[in-house]
Image 1 (cartoon, rainbow, N blue to C red):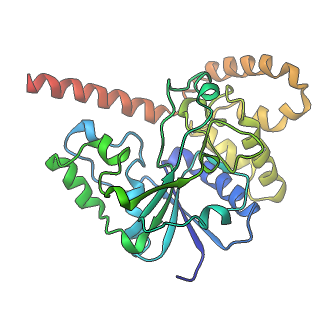
Image 2 (cartoon, rainbow, N blue to C red):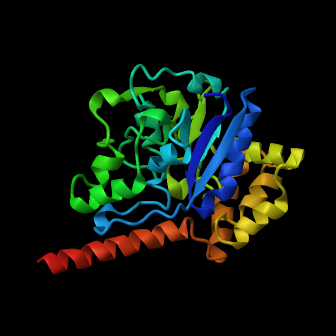
Length: 299
């Protein structure tokens, strides 16, 4: 199929500007014709069982891609909380070898990234970067939700095991470097700020946050982003207030003083009652309460 490389990005409204930063980083490193297509809060019906509900506003969005693509050609899926450092061509060129989707091959640097504050105890393979052969995927999101409601599978089987596909239809072929979970070195092609409460735009505690700030500064310099855009996200509660300081002032401060500045910035954000990913946090509480009530009814 001729046409641009289609990159579908899953996100909720709070990460709309993060998509623009990701797009800028993609296009800055490639000569390919790339179309970045945001999937923000798609109108997806929720399963009846709350235990099978989306963990984010876009968990099920990846299953909408074949239909959105007209069941034609290939596509890439990415989460919004990412940044690209290498030519997308090397990802796009990965062979399917008869499979319908290609996902991450392995997870590296567990010993380093699980020690990060706010990190899970274990890093697991993700489908946060996927190659999809849309011409061979007949996914229909309404039918997928019906399957959850019938009990054909649960959330974990759907999201983590890709149970919609047979074993030979999934290839583990995307290198870790193209979904580097909270880790960066000279081989990193894409960093994934996967720990939602320590993403650079929501927290002062991400040691790789400067990579994201650098991309934002480039966007401010070339006019593809304005400080007014960032200030709007702060007013809406999506970005932390201290982000303005990080972008404008941090480069002028000796690196040895950055930890002190981070503590001060966290204190200032607290004074302004900023809560990172407030909607995700509230949704998690609602889901836990619903599960508790559901368990009582069964008992």
